[in-house]
Each structure stands twice: as structure tokens, then as C-alpha cells.
Length: 396
Image (cartoon, rainbow, N blue to C red; front, side, top):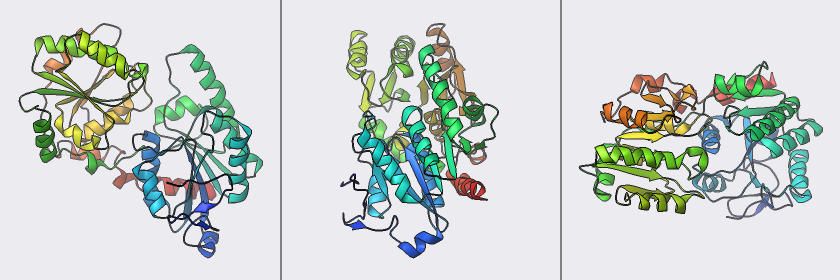
């Protein structure tokens, strides 16, 4: 895909430069309020990107024109969608790691020439602060800081860094929105904020018997108890502890299989760790997948013992599928949308985890928690107007 260059020309799906930010032309552009939505990237496995793209069809249109600014380039279904429909999509020319003058001038030029009514920042740290400062300098009246995660980390130096950047960002922002009450109170303190849930298409994640049969046949799981997880192979997700839990569970329940979706820098170390324990035939590393919503149906339970999490959308997606979930007690309780989740300690060994998994019942059928899902605030069909209403309230 041909992305925008430093010349700031908007590209149509055919690759030709067009003079307006939106394919409907200048006349329509004048009638709309313009929003610059800033995200780290538009990967489909990026929870923040998915949140904004879920709201996009219901918000972008008659009243609002939403342009995207991404810190890093990527190819994804989201990018293909924006390209196909001629929507504006910017990417930093040198990527987020380079805090150089080229990137800074690029951002400033976008904001200066875009005539935006709203700049909506969905990122953290350095670039969040820089973009908010640029927006203020360009006299953008509404500068939204969106907390998609609580200010949460298990590292003291990171806590101090996060606190500093958060307070500076709060100073330059004018409006505040959070994915949960917990996130809002953590990030914004006593400032007024609005809660907009990171809603997903609940129906997309509902239990699918055909998918279950397909994957369980494909991976020879018909007679197995399938424990599933979906996470990057990084320390934050506590992956070696997860393998330890699985090892002890497998000793008691040898028909158990661990289905693991995800990639990351610890991939080779984790595979070696599994091999050392003689579990290579019981742990299936599936890598990054675009069919995660269907793979949930192949599982019997979901487990992720993270050292810390923000919201943790995978827990919500898994519950939408009717799965029972096991999370660490370091995970925010906002993830409990069906009552179908247990929070367990990560500092007392594997025994509490193994015991809880063995004692639980695992019914698997469609619409198991339909009413809970509908009332959870995380179904996009129920929440679809939330972002548009928030933008409208900012402009009043």
C-alpha cells in the first residue's frame, strides 16, 4: 500500500493525490467537523486500533470526518478498508522510534493544514505529549486524551515515567475519556472524564459449533481438554508461569492441551522451555492469527496470568464466547462482564491455578451469557453512538 509522504498529500484508493481530506469533496468537508484520531498503529491485534475502528463506521459520516494518524506503518484489514474507501490515513515517515525533526515537522504540518476541530489522542508517553502540544499551538479547541488502560505497571521507574507524562498530557488536553471508571480515576485523578467502553462486535465472538468442530478436528483435539490463551510472548504476560501451571495441570489431567495464539520476542525461549519439560506435543503454538474470534470456540477454558494488564480485552472476548476465564489478581476487575472469571494470585505458586481449573465446569454453547453481554457496555451494537455523542458534547 502506498502511504502518505511528507508532502502531506491525501491519497485516494487509486493512489492519486486529491485535494480534500475526504472523498466527498470540499463542499461536504465544510459541513463536517474534522477529527484527527491518533493511534500507535492499525494492526487488527491492537486493542486500541480495534476499538477506534469498531466505532468508526458509526461516527464517521454526516457530522464528523475522521482522519487517522499512525505512529507506525502496518498492513492490515483496517488499512485495506481505509484505502478501499478513500479515507485519510497518515503514517510517521520515520516511525515512532525516531523522535527526529522529520517526524515532528510532519505532525505539525498535518495539524496546521488540517483545520481540525478535534485531535483525539489514543497513545501515551512522548508522542502523545508532543501531539497535544502541537494541537494547542495550532489552536485546536478540543484536544482529547483517551485512557485505554489504567496507569498500571509493576516497574517503579516506569511508574514515575508514566506519572510524569500523564500529568503533562493532562495539562495540554481539554477533554478526557476513559475505557473504564478505573482507568479514568487512575489516569485523570479528579478531572472530569467520560467513559466509553472498548466495545467489540459481540456477535463476532459468540460460540460457533462449526468452528469448534473444524479446529478440534484440524488439531486433533476431539478428546482433549483445551486450555487456551492469546497473548504476546513478552514478560508482562507471565508466559513461563503459564507453562508451569500447564505442566502441573497436565500431570493430573494428561488429556489437557494448551492452545497458544500470539508471537513475541520470547517465542524461541518459550518453545525451548516447553521442550525441556517434555510438553511439545501438548502445547500448540499457533502464532499470530486473524481468526482469533473463531479459535475461542475450539477452547474449553481461557487462561492468562499477566503480571499486569490494562483492561485486557481478550478476557472480555473470551467471555463473549462463553468461555470461563482465569486471570491474575493483578488484572482490573472491570474485565468481569459475565461473572465467568476467576482472579488468582501469581505469588503463591501454581497450586491455586491448577485447583481452580480442575474444579470448574465448562459448558459450551451459543448465547450462554446473552443478557450479560447485552448489558455489559462492551457490545458495539449497544454502544455504537457513544463516541459520536462524546464528540458532539465537546463541540457544544
